[in-house]
Image (tube, rainbow, N blue to C red; front, top):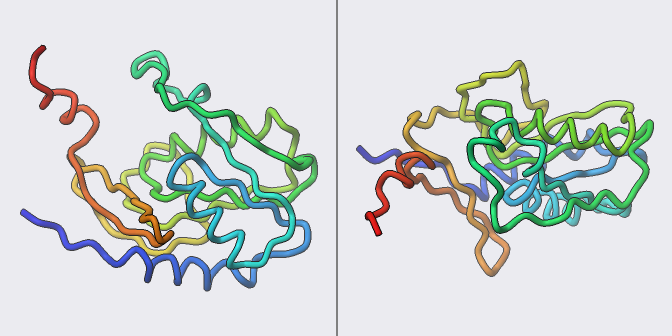
Length: 177
């Protein structure tokens, strides 16, 4: 069964439209690696934000770290501004269980106590395990539980969405050595 996915560029345009009136002088954008960071970079530019952009790699804050181990692609987080008392806009590509957002908030609080944290996502696919909701969202639609919704960024900087097998299914599909 094939699931038709919406155009990621149209979802981006909708997210941008929702965010424009929410951006103030005290707003700081923080993207979650990798897809959220891509979105945050482009939003930062398209919204004309002059304050520096923050990027989080939440690998050490994940609650499944002991099960999944450490990725070879861990990069340092970069928050080049004072978080204390700031209005933060946390950006991610896909909102699913809420665990990634929880990990990102835990890391942000290590930098200080923000005035507030709002969440912007390209897609809300449902399936929440934690009480977390996005204030701005390009679209909400269901994705089969055995699929992962993946944001891809082309060399031109444009976005596309694709579906792939879950991490567990991909690991099980690998041939034995």
